[in-house]
Length: 301
Length: 170
Image 1 (cartoon, chains in turn green, orange):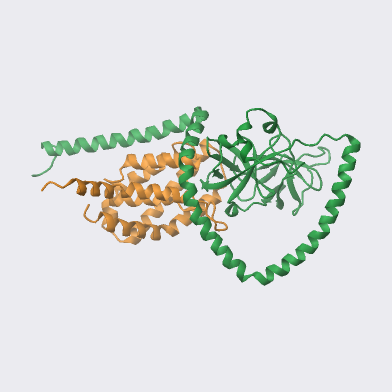
Image 2 (tube, rainbow over the protein chains, first blue to last red):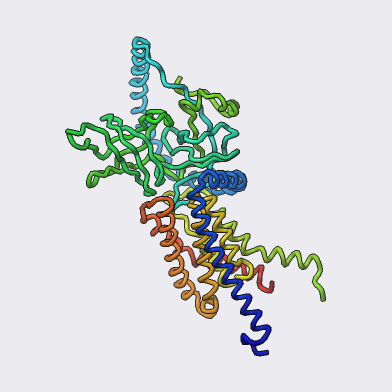
């Protein structure tokens, strides 16, 4: 049978096409509607994100393990190949570190005596929660990670996240059993930092590149902008109260046209476990008791 | 002959392959890659899958399927809700409307078509995220696009193998 718009079959096909087109346009409209909703009601969207993350976290956890296993094998082979050179390097480093240890012991003792004399109020003790990175989400537009610890484990929004001794980012949102870590390279990441040697304060602002920018450098307004030189170490300043002071962040990598860029110490691909630091108000307020079993004492004592 | 229950269930399971595979690829993009420099360069696997199935089996991965998968990706990735949903929907629409052209041509032509579609998709995503969330460095977007382009032959070959194995006569 010839199909043209006059015949019943042709008319049906025509109608189906119309319905399909209409459905397509409706979905396009829905997408724009959702974008507006996401702008208007961030709390709702955030809650939805975290419940989905809670549901996906166990699945992702299982999927992340083989990848980590393969990485471990590759690393083992690599380590075996470089055993001799590595040994020599470590011996040299060990000699250097032993020297530093002596210096640190002496300074620690001296510091304690001086602090006692001055009646110095020590920083609040921090508590730690260690969690596994289960997902590295949205590589290009959002630099964040999902970890498998949430409100049930005592994780709260705004807490600092560290890997070893260096800063990774902060907790951006918390679900029941998972949380999203905003890396310090993300567009929305702002970390109050200080240049370790000169004590110049600044804000480290991410812009989705590998090297975040130093902005709002404090200094004498009459003397012009403070000088920053490549190679200077950047640590957290502790301003704002969310981050403990003195966590290493990175080193100044380049200064071009007055814009200083910082090479963070973290390597995103090496993050397998991270430590959430419960510091300041979060540690003393009631209501963060749910995590006693997963915490260990602070190392600042 | 009326097909038996077992046969129908088998067929039903096979028909879930495009959606299931695309969801699996979505999870794959989330697995932390332990390769130095690879974070942020994960190829857009979901985009490839949607493009592929829109050409070969749009009946099994319809436009609203692409929309929902995009929505899920927005939710887990942290991109503004609706952005990836819209982009995947448009990619599906373009690919499905040009499927006769792609079906009748060689792989090189399909790759070339994918390059165009993925370029527009990347730009659109970058623009929408910029307006709704903030303008980041465009360099990462370019690298991700090149990575996506370079891995498309491999991913589409795997998809084609699975397609032929499970959906040859289903």
